[in-house]
Length: 477
Ligand code: ZN
Ligand code: MN
Image 1 (cartoon, rainbow, N blue to C red):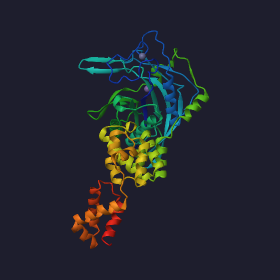
Image 2 (image 1 turned 60 degrees about the horizontal axis):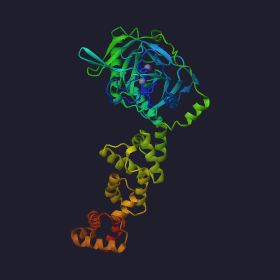
Image 3 (image 1 turned 90 degrees about the vertical axis):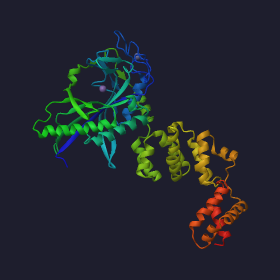
Image 4 (image 1 turned 120 degrees about the vertical axis):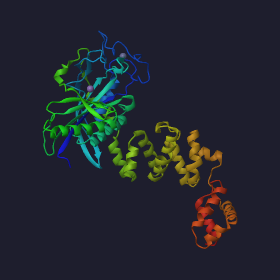
C-alpha cells in the first residue's frame, strides 16, 4: 500500500431539464440547432436586459438537493460572479454565493459492496456560458448554450480514489435522473466534472494544497485524470517539491496528462456581489414540503429493497435499479406474477428485444400489463412456455397487441386435450423407433427427442408435461 492517501472532492455541473433557459424564455434544448439561433437579448447579455429566474428550474434544483439529503434554505439569492471570458458576454455569471438554495447534504455510495457516506457541501443554481470552437487561428462563438440552467453540486473532500470518484459521479447521475432534474446526457454536455485532488501522508488529517482539474466530460476521463494527477503530485512530493499553492489544471484526453493552467483563483478574485436585477428568493415551507413528497425512492434504496424483496443477484438488482422506468416495469411484473418469471421475461427476453430494436424501456411496444398477461397465460397452461417466449412474444413486440388476442387469432392455445396428445405421441413413437427402443431400455435422453418430435408436429402447442406422461404410458414405463 502506498504511503500516500489521496483526498478528492468533486464539483458537478448538471444541466437542469427545464423547458426554458435559466433567466429567459429561450428553449433549453439547443442540441443540433444552428449556432446562435437559440438566443435572445437576455441570454446574450445585452445592456439593459432583465433576467427572470425560471420557476421550473428552481423546483427541479431543489428536488435534486432534497434527493442529496441537503437542507433547503427558505431564503436564498443570486449573485454576480465576475470574470471575463469571450464565451461570457455578460462579463459575469449569475450564480449563488453565500446564500444558495441548499446546503449540507450526504449521499451514500457502494464501494466494494460497502456503503460509504460522501458529504455534499451545497447545491446551487447558475447559468452556463456559451461555447468556443477553435479552428486554426480562428475562434468561433456559439451562444446557444449561454443561459442554460445548471445545478452545481459540490462535494466534501471525502473521496479517496479515482474509483470512488467515478462511483460517486455515477451515483449522482442516477439520482438526478430518478428525480427528473437532469437527463445527465454526457454526450450532449449535460454533465461535467471538476475534480480537486491533493495528497497527504497516510494517517495525516490536514488538507494540503490541491490541484483542480477543470471540465472533465466523461467518467472515463474523470478516472484517468485523477489517477494521473495523484501520480504527478506524489512525484513532486518525493522530489522534495510538493504543491505549495493551489493550481488549476487542464486534462488533455489525447495525451493522457494534466497541464497547469494557472494558480487557482479564490472567491475574492471573483468580486461576488448580490445580483441587483433579481430579488431575493423566498420559498414557502409548505411549498418545500409538497416538493419533498414528489421526490421518489432513490436508486440505492431501491437496489437494497429489490435484493431483499425479490431475492435477486446483486448484479440483477443493480441492473434494474439503474433506471427508474425499468425498475418500475420490473417491479410491476414481479409483483403481479413472481420474481423468477419477471426476471426471465423482463431481464432477459424483453431487454434483448429492445436492444435489437434500439428502443428504451419507455418506448417498449410490450407494456408491463401485457407482460403480466403473457406470464399468466403460461401459468394457467393456456400457452406453452416455448411458444410464449418465441412466436407469441415476438408477435407482441411487432404489433403491441395483447397476448390473449394474439393467442386467439393465431390459434396458439396449448393443446391439453388427451386424445389429441395421444395421437401426436403415437405418431412420434412410430416415426422414431430407435428413440422409442432406447427409452424403453431406460435411456432417458431419448425422451428429449421424442418430446421434440411431438412439439414440432403440434407447432409448439402440445402441453409438454402431458406429452411426457403420455409417452411413458404408451411405452408402459
Ligand atoms: Zn434567451
Ligand atoms: Mn459553477
